[in-house]
Length: 259
Image 1: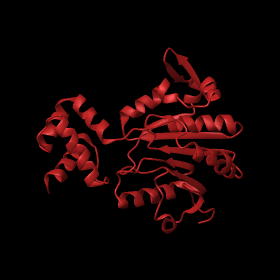
Image 2: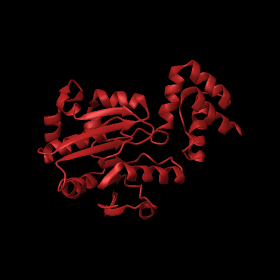
Image 3: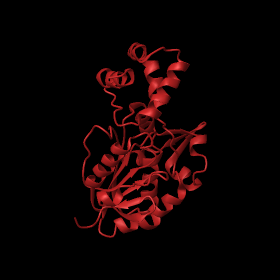
Image 4: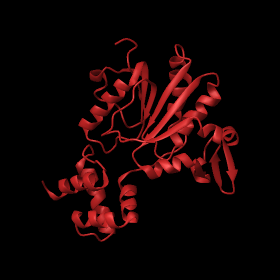
């Protein structure tokens, strides 16, 4: 076992943080650059430092994960979701079970709730929003965003679903109640079943190809027949056919109606 492998093993043992499914070269580069900034000479000392100082551990988590999120990210794809995907899903369903996997600071699940409320008001739905980083989940649950974070959003959504307080925008409680936030590790924890729509967008960038394939297989098994997986704009699933998906639109993968 080399020093990096031992470091990964220590992270699992000491912090219950499992990075085994992540691509080593990218992870190593990011970790080493942070160690240089913090003047920490080696992995062993890094573990000691993180254990002793919560602030250092938080810096590490921030550096490790790219929690970049925005409301209605890649608007054209949300238009497809609204105009084609959801209308097809509700043909045979009066209720939708939705999962935002890797929800980061909450913009994606709140965008989903706004879309459902404004365009499909008669449809019952539930949204599970999960992430393995408890700190971004706390921000998501709080639902407080800066002017910059809501820039570019449709004014009618801002007025209807947010409350402005000084320089901040607060998600209204009615919308918050539509979403359940939960800590969940996509690589190590089991998936619930029975979803009609799963969003996993801009999450798998640092996962190994094997981990990605396993993840997409697990999503497939979590979907109801006819259910849809919605991926990010750089995340085409190369093994989609092998797994059993068909294409519903670009970046929308469907589980067949009948298995």
